[in-house]
Amino acid sequence: MAPKIAFIRKGRWPLANVRTAEALRAQFPEYELREIDLIPIILRKPALVALNGWWTLRQYAGDLALRRRGPKDAFLITSYIFKAVKHLVADLLRDDEYVFSFQMQSLFDASVPNIPHFVYTDHTLLANRQYPGFNPASLYHPDWMKLEPTIYQNANLVFTRSNHVSRSLIEDYHCDPAKVRCVYAGSNAPLISEAPDPARYASQNIVYVGIDWERKGGPELLQAFAQVRAVYPNATLTIIGATPQTNQPGVEVIGRIPVEQLPQYYQRAAVFCMPTKLEPFGIVTIEAMNYWLPVVSTNLGAMPDFIEHDRNGYLVEPGTVDQLATALIKLVGDPERCRRFGARSVEIAARYRWEAVGSTMREAIIQNREHRT
Image 1 (cartoon, helix red, strand yellow):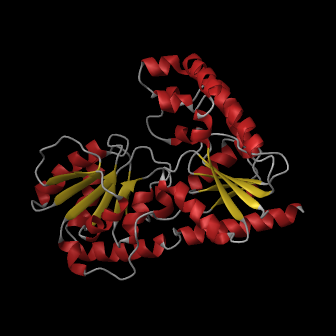
Image 2: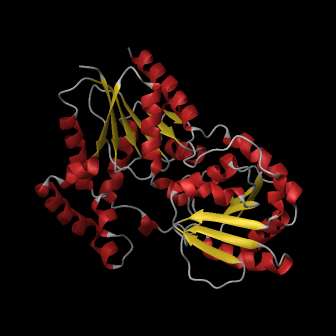
Image 3: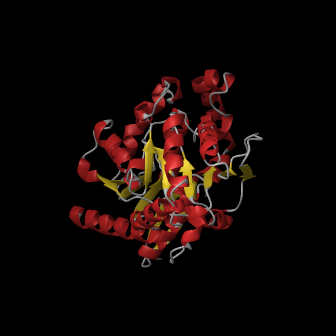
């Protein structure tokens, strides 16, 4: 029987779960990659579901009553389910030979004794304290938070998608810096290899992509766009993902579309903008950069990793409508600046490829295993 890699995830969504599995499978062809989805495994155990339902009410009844959390979200962040998953994974990995296990995100500790274990995450819970308007009530139950550090302590290496998460692991959780590696992430939209027609930068079209309208700064963008239209009456704003109710002039609301359809909107835009107020990573910004777009976003989370202020876009402070409008006006009215910034975006985005992420992970995993043998 061929040795295996245990790839442990919570569902196929987001797409990074699929892309990371593909990258590992390509980088480790000598092993069989076994994908383990925890959700259906949990749901097939009625006693576990019932017990955790009780724990969900015990630990999050107030949040549920106030609608600060949904039942599905709260169900997965109890201290009981955290410990139950630990036992479930140990049972699942008991009978086969695994060269290592690999866990997506930091919701559970899926490590098993005597099997090297690696974590890939775009957030930590305590990193939320860095965001403006942080509300302590958004943290999980204290019993869960006592368990979270074990996710990182029991991993051989923790891979992150951004430097701000790496800093959180080191500063908030006191992880050994040698155990933390920022490997970035890849784009999910199809890529293009040739520079676009420069005429597109005269379109004065701004494109926004995001589902969580409030969190991703949608209302502020609409306010800023009104200022843009006052200067450039032909400017337009295309909203993809979210479906806000608006009759604002120049605004087109597309709503949700398959990721394969995104390129047509990137390719006809002059600027990408997502003025998020809380963002673990922001993969859509990378996607827009791959389409030779200048980008405008907020100075938080992973954004400073890939937005070089006044070189491929602009970073503004969260919630500052006037700053956002000023940045957009600079770009909408200057096609040559958009072209120049877009070319720099493509250069920066080159490190955000799933092939590169997988290659970096393979090298680190092999080095770690050799170091411990």
